[in-house]
Amino acid sequence: MPKRIVEVSTEGCYLKLRHRQLIIEREGKEVGTVPIEDMSALVIDHPQTLITQAVLSELVQANVMVISSDEKHQPVGLFLPLDSHTTQTERIAAQIDLGAPTRKGLWKQIVKRKVRAQARVLHDVTGSDAGIAQLEKKVRSGDPDNIEAQAARRYWSRLFDSECFKRDRFAEDQNRYLNYGYAVLRALVSRSLCATGLHPSIGIHHKNRYNSYCLADDLMEPYRPLVDLNVWQIVEDHGHDNEMDREIRRRLIEIIKREVVMEGERLTLQGAIQKSAQSLARVMQGYEKLLSLPEY
Image (cartoon, rainbow, N blue to C red; front, side, top):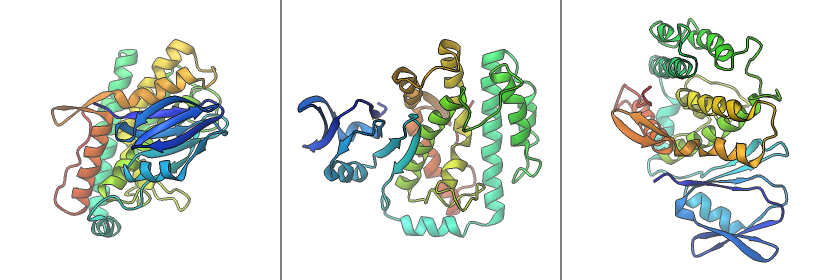
């Protein structure tokens, strides 16, 4: 059973802990309660929300993410555990010392699966993959030909049926929905990486001194098309210029309930990401060569 993401978006909520239960109060009355063990994330979406230190401590010990959103309802902060795996030091050392051939091989696997996923999504939505499936076969170690970008150029304009559409984190169209969905996905991946003993900032391909989640950005790539498909359906139902209201945020968050197939097994999105993170750690330590990724 997938764990729950709890969103607090009502003014004046007070969050406290009682018997390992998250208690939500408003105006002195209890309005909700959730067992901590049933949660994967807490999204705080209103600036006038109070939370006790006991809640934060219990959530982080249970490996539950705490996400803070801004006035535009976009996630801007993430609270993750610092020490959540018995061999964390050993795994981070392997992560830092990872050789170029392994890095490039991992990136090849990630790009190939992302491109395959984009081809599948585009085919499901439009009836044609626009030749993206063929691009997957051209991906080489390290993707020196930037097949990822070539696929993206074909993908985005056709997915939303607009030659003018492009990914822009500051745009006021469906990019807002994509940004929110990717932020939730990034948080799920970061949580799994920490639980596996890897450091989310030490990437295999993404390298940016200002990015604290380079490895999360690497590993989430093959999962992004799941968010894209979810956003496409929301745009079909609501258009691309609606406010980021509670219903749209709910639909974006509920992607965690989606099931994916990995190595012939049906898993929740959370379970699949956790399996990918564990697989990544084993590859970095030299125990395996192939990364476990969702099938499309």
